[in-house]
Each structure stands twice: as C-alpha cells, then as structure tokens.
Image (cartoon, rainbow, N blue to C red; front, side, top):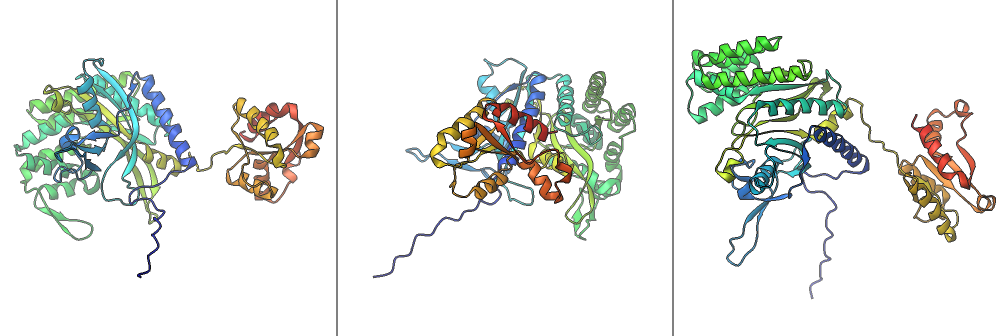
Length: 495
C-alpha cells in the first residue's frame, strides 16, 4: 500500500502585489483620511460609499487594459444555468463607479451632485517596487456642472488638503492645463488622425524628462534614449512640430505671460481659444480666493488621460527633493491628479453630463510625509494593567474599565502572568506609555504603583538618571486618584 503523503500546509505569505498593514500604518492612514474628509466636507461635498464590485460592463471602455477584455482588473463570471452570468470586477478606481451611481440615482440626487469617496481600489497589473495591486484613493467630484468655477474649486480644495495633511506651502504646486488648448495646437498642426494625435500627446507628456530638444527629436525621426536604444519618432516635419514646441515652452514667470503665449500657440483655433479662456477664468477665480502662483500655476506640460479628460486637467506635485536608491537627488513627484470628464456618464444615459474631479494618492502622501520627517512609525500604545494575582482579575478589570470610561486607552495583561518581566516586555512591545501594578501590599494600602515606561526608555538611552532625578520612573498613588494621576502623566509625556 502506497504511503499517503501528508497534506501540505498553505504558505503563510501575501499574494504578489499585495501587502499587510499594521497598527501604526493603519492609524496614520485613518488620520489622514479623516483630515482629508474634513476638508472635503468643509467645501460642501457629501460622502458616498459605493460597492467594491462593479459589472465589467459598467466599468466599460475605461478599463486599465482595453486591448485584453477583463485584463487589468480582478474579474470573474457569475454562474447561472446557461453559463451566461454577468462578468464582475473589483473596482479599479472610484470615478467609474461614480458615473454608474449618478446615472442610476440621478432622479433622486441634487444637481450638481458633489460627492467624495475614499477606499481601496484593485488593479491586476504587474507589481513592482512601491507599486501594489491594492491601494487607497481619495476622490472628490462635482457632477452636473459645466462651469469652470467647479474646476477652480477642486484645485483650491486640493491645495488646502495638501496643507491640512502637513505639506508646507512651498513644498507643493498644483499645475493646471486644458485639453482644449492641446486640441487647438493639434488643429493648428493639421493633425486629425486619432492615432497620430495620441502619439503627439504621449510625446508632450515626456517633456519633463527629455526637454525641448528631446521632444523635437521624438516628434520628428526619433532619438536615442539614455540606454542607447533608438526610439522611433512621430514623423512630423519641423514646421508641423513647431506649434507643439511653442505650446510646451509657453510657460512664463507670470500667469498673464503664460496665457498670452498660449494664445499665440493656438493661432486661429476656436477650440484652443475656448481652452485659454477657461484657463483665464480659472486663474481669475483662484486669485480672487487667495490662491496665487505660489500654490497653483498654469503649466502647459500637464497631460493626463489621453482618452478621458475633455477640459481642464490638473495635478499636484511635491517639489521637495528626496534621494533615490542610488543616493541621487530627485523630486518626489505627483501625488494627486484629475480634471474634467464630460463623457463618462453619457455611456449610461445617452446624454452628456459635465463632471470634474480629483483623486489623491493617500499612500504616496503618507510616504512623502515620512520622507519629510513629519511622521514616524511609532504610535503610543495602551496603558497596561499588570496582573500580580490571577485570582484578582475582577479588581484589574475594574481598574481598566475606569480608565476606559475616562477616555484613556487601556488593557489588562491577558497572557501568562507568572513572569512579571514578561508582562513589562509585552508593554514595551505594545509601546505602552504606562504600566499599572497592584500587588497584595498595594491592595491592603488602597494604592497603586505607576511605572512611567516612556521615562524608563529615555533613561535607558542616556544610561543616566541624573537629569531625570526630579521625575521618578515609578511611584505610588492612591487608588482613588487613578484617573487624574494617569491623565496628568500622559499629558506630561506628550509635552
């Protein structure tokens, strides 16, 4: 008889492209989301929580990978008798679900509909360093208003949000452009073929990396990249390429100068002129609200969503320097982006519904704040009530309940109480600020021992108690003074 193989244990590992988040990371994200939600709410936006699963049909042509149906998302087909059930997918962003929600409930929603949404999204893409298949987005959108005042408001709110979460003014810039201006430039160039237009827009998007000369080469015959590989160009003549170069180099030291240069770049194009007018209106509205070029600027190099945006586009870039893996300085880059998308809801209703919005990358913002030293991974744990006598658990529970009822985070040690040293080790692992001790002597005297674990850690670091001589590491208090004395010590530790 063949020997039966033992069943293999499952591997304790996360799937590729996913990761686990522990206490401090979760707490910091929660705090950031709460802060962002506060700004959005102050601007009059209402919260929306839609399903994490949508039909693939509802996600539609804006799937991450349109050339491979159901690729780019995590999708599956529901079972039915005829094997013809709906295809479902985890949402890949928060905008496509909004289009479905508005189309479905438009008769019950106010117009314009101003909503914000926060939560995880999923993309079935190849993972890489810092690139995960699940990540958080934080969106705000106005649906049903074609007024560019809605776009200007989103940009102002984005600037306020960055400052609210801890990005100093001067460490970020919100950059604005308009797809209509880009379309005007393409019109002046005489380009009407969609594929050729898309190639030109992709080249424009590389301006920050390759500069003016690189763009000229890529619009023409092509160029050698840094690795020595040859990249084929779009194949335009120098005369055809000139409006693009004029457009990309139109940014001036002043808003007025940039707008004047853009008007020159779009020539007689009506759609281009409309785009410049919209940028002028946005600039005027933002200036009236106190949002000057130190926070928000018009920048022709901003290109977003080749088949998605229809008017103003914007992105927030962090301008401070960080070090890459080789120690070279580079800017942190974009942490948010958005724009006007007037065609998305039309897929459901057949009628054009103007909309504009922004999406903030919460995880990138958290990473930026860590790099700036504004956040650390240490979070204060609970006060730990130690157990000196396992038969007196009711007494210890009464202590911890009293602390919790006073709003103090606390817990009773629930491990094996045999070793007091292990209890203190546990408190250190939990980053607890205080340990409370009550043995038989303290019970008889109606007192408690309070151990200041924060002070103990500082003494351990300096190997000297002289500078802390006026502040004892452990002291006795009356049982009746529990809450007042613990609150006072926590306040002292936080100073």
